[in-house]
Structure formats: C-alpha cells, structure tokens
Amino acid sequence: MKKPQRDITLRFLAETQDVNFGGKVHGGAVMKWIDLAAYACAAGWSGRYCVTAYAGGIRFVAPIHVGSLVEVLAKVIYTGKSSMHIALEVNACDPKSLNKRTTTHCIVIMVAVDQNGQSELVPQWIPESEADIKQHDTAMKLMEMRKKIGEEMEIFVD
Image (cartoon, rainbow, N blue to C red; front, side, top):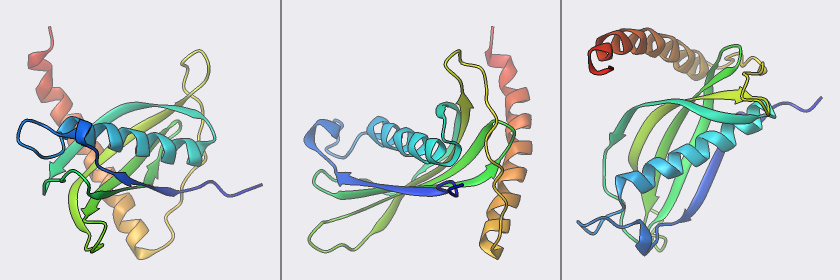
C-alpha cells in the first residue's frame, strides 16, 4: 500500500483580483488559499473528501503584494479518528529575487467524510523526528486551548 502524502505546497502568483482597498492582497484571499491547501493536504493524507472543521491562530505577519510568488505549505501534524490537524505557512516573494518571507501561518482542522457527510476514519500519523514530536505535542496543547476558548465563546452564541 502506498504511504499517504503528509504535506503539500501550492504555488501561484498573487493577482489583481486578490487586492484589498489598501493595495495589498486581501486577508480573505489568503484564507481561501489556506483552506485550499489544507484540503489538498488532508485529502492526500486520508484518500477521502474532507471538510474544514476549524481554522485558528491565523497570524498575518506581513503583506503580500500583487505579482508576488506565493507558496502555501501544508502538513499533517496530528490525526484523530477522522480529523487531521494541518499546520500551514504562507510565504511570498518577488519572483525575480526569490527572497521568501513568511506572511501568514495558522492551524486548520479537516475532517474526512463520506458522501452522506458522515465522518470516516483516517490513517494515523505517527511522529518520527524530533521536529515532528514537537509539532504533535503542540497540536495536543492547542486542542486543550481550543476547548477553553470554545467554552468562553459560548456567551456569544444564542
């Protein structure tokens, strides 16, 4: 059996339709790219159709300019029964210089589902390297934090 694909990189040029009123790439466009990469990564790992269950910790570190070469790197850092925690990093550069800089990073949780929208089992990811173990441990800590944040957010739900 073929080993699941743990990571993926999407590359493309930022286009004029991605620009906000300030002349930089709109945060919503970046979030769309993140969601696309998270889906491609999760589908590659699970071999299933996947849906976004959570996106959080999004940090917009630096702007992206129109014409920039954009890379969205996604990789599995934790798996549950049907969920996959995907770490994402967005880098951008002038395609003439290729001097990359990180612009955005976050975590997205994807869930594998069948044609009826019911969750399906995914292959377990087992960390191997020291970096993998640190990322896995961080994913576990973030799960606990999200539970607490979710409890606090209940006040805003009718």
